[in-house]
Length: 209
Image (cartoon, rainbow, N blue to C red; front, side):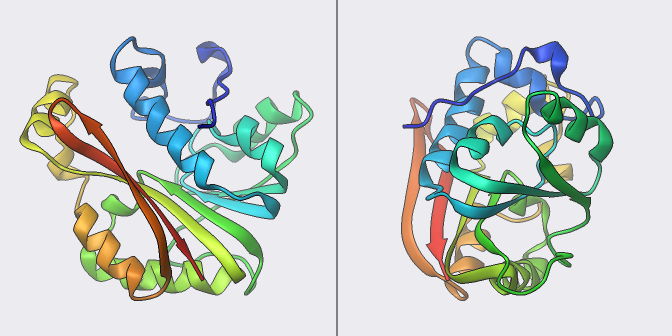
């Protein structure tokens, strides 16, 4: 499995206090946060171009730079200039835009891979169809979509509540909603669950166009 390459925590910029970047460095929760990204990155086949929807701080960019010639990103809230500057200082050029997965501002058949980590659960079930339609449009023939979504369990709700986060105010679709929408548009390659002593808490999905 790919190991997530992280910058020192204080070097990440371009997001507000709600970004989960700090969790990646915590002793126990951090392992789970890193593992879900590592599993998603392990499914990325590499190529010319990748689009990450919801790139946030750019936590995947060091790894994606090893796999793709061009890294593109789409995010609704990130400070694009701040994020770009961080990686330019390390010789990594990124092509970042503000925007939504419901209206991806790229031409048809642009990307080898579209990556979404903990993004699709924030859409309402009725929006998932449009999201996957847009993802399909910008993927090259034979391209892949790799996504990760949480599997909601009572313990997860309690755990996030202890961090001051009510996930029911942010998660509108379940992993089943996302899967059913994806398989109507794409061909399933594999679903990878993340299991803990409390059961399955997250899953990575890999589909192809």
